Image 1 (cartoon, rainbow, N blue to C red):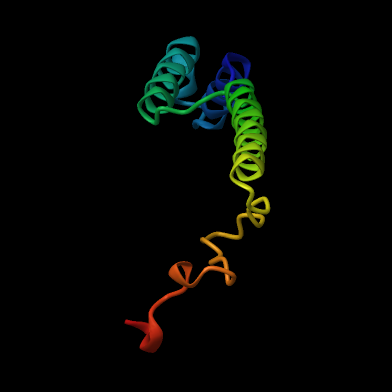
Image 2: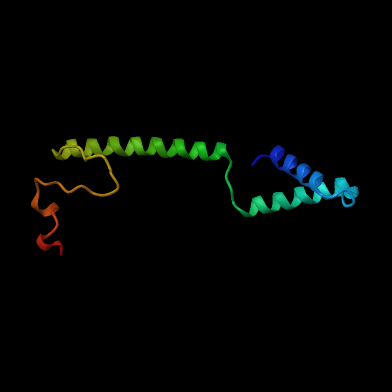
Length: 104
């Protein structure tokens, strides 16, 4: 959350307070702003920009890993690995890659 959003939220909170309490206006808004900053900083949040940067780094790393896997498979004379679908896919052409009979 950026500073302008926090300031806007603090202003709206102070405006929502009953008229009798609103006399402390600027002080109340300052206190709301401090509480919001404190609460958000304890959450250990990242900005959208930081998230997007890390997502890009992860995508480039994944591309490099896939290229290295394909290169290694070519050097070893094996076909490239299957797309990762959340688990290892055993190579049916090699008996040692298959689970033992009886599931044990």
